Length: 88
Image 1 (cartoon, rainbow, N blue to C red):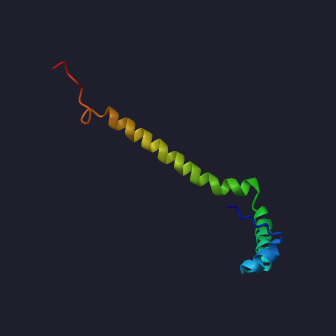
Image 2 (image 1 turned 30 degrees about the horizontal axis):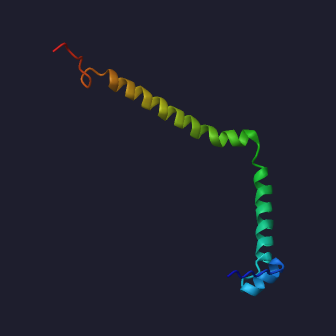
Image 3 (image 1 turned 30 degrees about the vertical axis):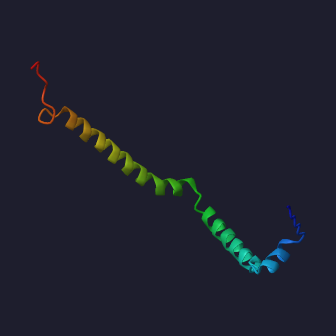
């Protein structure tokens, strides 16, 4: 047995039928706020400003990585940690 129900209604009618809240006002307010924030943040899109904020963090990360590599190499070459293997 097959039962087929077809409902032809607008989204507003469907929300009312299902008892869902109308969030159009909230959506419009949120979109206006997001547009305002985006417009404000565009003023900080100056390449010099971006680089001044990003460069110190990336340079610190590069220094940490370089230090790690040097320490690892020093440990690998340390005769106390890695004594030479004999023909025993």
